[in-house]
Length: 442
Ligand SMILES: Cc1cc2nc3c(=O)[nH]c(=O)nc-3n(C[C@H](O)[C@H](O)[C@H](O)COP(=O)(O)OP(=O)(O)OC[C@H]3O[C@@H](n4cnc5c(N)ncnc54)[C@H](O)[C@@H]3O)c2cc1C
Image (cartoon, rainbow, N blue to C red; front, side, top):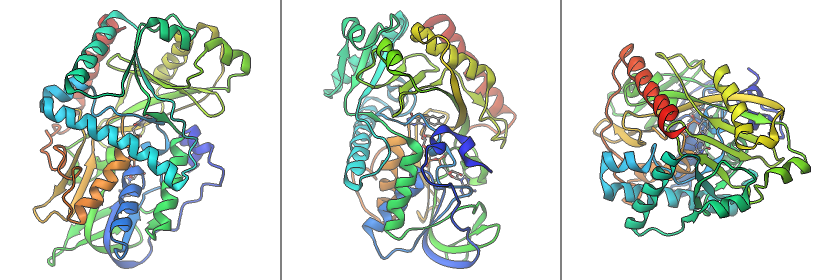
């Protein structure tokens, strides 16, 4: 497989992408982590930081960053679940507030990790801007301002039309929610750097090593098998996010949903001047199916979202969706008419993990708390999964921290129904959200 085709980000990696050697032996370890995205790499790094003597192995089916971690929009942001309103409705005010604080910690923590370890990932702390582009979206953002004010949380700015008009040469924006602590980065470079610091701590990483089965043995340990090897371990971590569906024990907890991205050619100086955007912040609108967009280090425009593709059963073949690509391409010149005719050079997509109540979950399988899963980060996992890795490490080390006692750790997830009902239900939800966007949030 040519992994560079999976996203432009993977194409920007300076080195050849050659998978690490696969697992080809029968081994024994303390912890096996399945999945080499941010969750798995961060969990490995933090385990060895907390307990250097632990023998920690990561099994990745392709290359680290093959999943969402190598393909995402690169926003380090504070959104937990789908919206603050849904989180508040589902879990109540106090937990929704705690979720916001966890996410602020996640963004700050990733910022600090990048600084502390010199993670070379084109990070720019240019903030996050949620914009209203219609009156209904203004109402949504106003509601969020009321929530955050009641919670007494600081650090979020209100950008009125005049401020927006100063920053951007577009008529499109009516109200803005700006969070200066957030940032943008190159997600594939971040994955490679997280892999580097995990390996420096002596985490052993096998690539091209899909886990085919695992079973619990009579002594309480796990036997984890790949095509060519096996590892006997005490703790097992499923850091498989949207791919968790491939494991029967996790099948009903989440569903994979595919989001898509288009990327323009680099903008020359004249075009850059024509759009403003000197603050370089990452931007999202406030529709149901948000558009998310940003500049890259070489001044391309990345535009994503707008709709999603749904998967039936275990079919992960949804990286491309031509009508969504066309929609995203048109949306660039809707927001910035001065960019009409700009050339699109790359198009790709990837799976995010969705729970029924649209909120993340970390939990245990089995009463002895030796197997842990993490899933459901929606399209907002860049900062969160990095901190979740620390949380998972603390859980394995038996620590009691503000993170391990978060309400979404060990929470009960609402199961998705089996196919074909799951596909039908998710089509209905998608249809409803598309209709709301067309009629209300447009
Ligand atoms: C197009 C797109 C845009 C996004 N944009 C943003 C954004 O701008 N900001 C943000 O915060 N979030 C964004 N997200 C979400 C974010 O990327 C994810 O939440 C995050 O990367 C999840 O990390 P992870 O390590 O949990 O999962 P993944 O990165 O998906 O890693 C899971 C890994 O498990 C491996 N695996 C699966 N099955 C097996 C097996 N049987 N054996 C071994 N390994 C296996 C996979 O190959 C994969 O590498 C986006 C996601 C997508 C797809």
